[in-house]
Length: 277
Ligand SMILES: [Zn+2]
Image 1 (spheres, protein in one colour):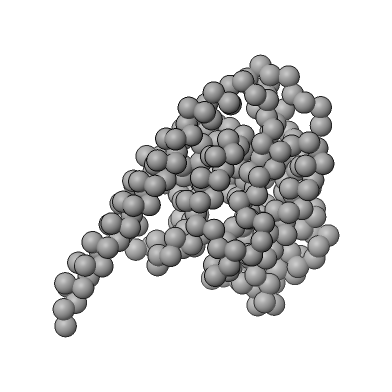
Image 2: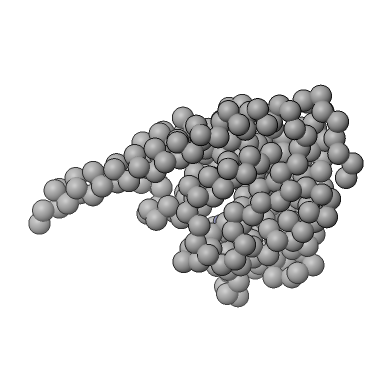
């Protein structure tokens, strides 16, 4: 009874929520565009924003062993931050403890800090327990393939919405899609490739390559940005490896090497002398 009216009301609510969030993200993006551009053209590569996915009530993926994505990715983010600080990079973490941080707040923290690079760290999950390996994404409105779209749908659930497989999310993504910074697309792709190459060295058989998908956390970020899925918690092999501190350290070290290599290219492309690392 009243199904149609309820549905219409629900849709209206969704549209209002979409407009509010898109407006908020748009304002954040616009606010920092000029400063980020001014900064980017003059200053050498220095500030790295590390975004540990999920947190607090948003646990992310869970392994059968009980290992939680939110804990795992925070640990890797801290390890990476420590390594980069050791090389005199300035590191900004979007969260440093087990707390819920909305996606738009992560974006604004990165833009306010005028980061030179944004790295979002996540762990994957799939219905097939055989799926395993590491993949790196940079943002686009169109996903590279159906599986990539599903990964973005899952990661976008932190918005408090149901699965994005529903058509309601399309206008939402279309609105946010306007904010994707094409200026940084080449750099984002470059970093994603470097990161994936370094991570593939850890276990060549588990490299799933560089892909593109509509991750909300990467939209509106006014700097080169990539999202790394460091393994599948739904796969026993990956979950077992990720439970080991030594493996998490190797992932952090691989990402550190990718950041150093990216920083050199970033400065060279702008005719800047890179700081010694
Ligand atoms: Zn995640």
